Image 1: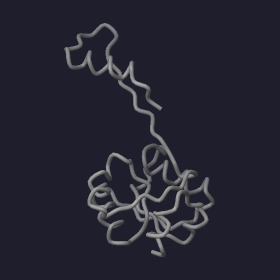
Image 2: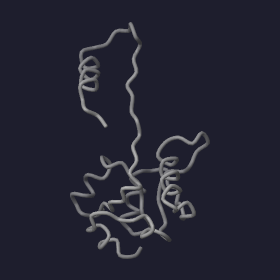
Image 3: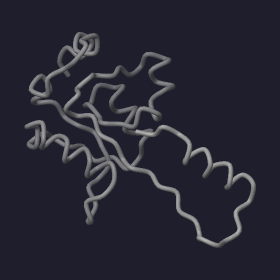
Image 4: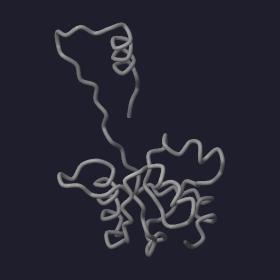
Length: 130
């Protein structure tokens, strides 16, 4: 990998600065859903569709390979909190690569909901989620 320490300190990184880098992510599965699909779509949208993709089925293994310098990854922010605290991973701010996955909660319309489930649904309904 090239000068990623320098890029991590930048306010914003242009996707072209990441040309030639290997990317580590989940294997692409039929149906085109999930993190693998999002990573493939974001890379293509940024002109990096021909990037080398290393498919690893474990999020923990992906993080360890990225820490070891085998490539870059597009990972959920919540999954790298510990590595950021330990400073074993750094965030490259590439606005064009930013992605989100909608999360929904479903329940039976007239089914029984325990207290914890009701509180969770209330929290989700009242939150200012993006």
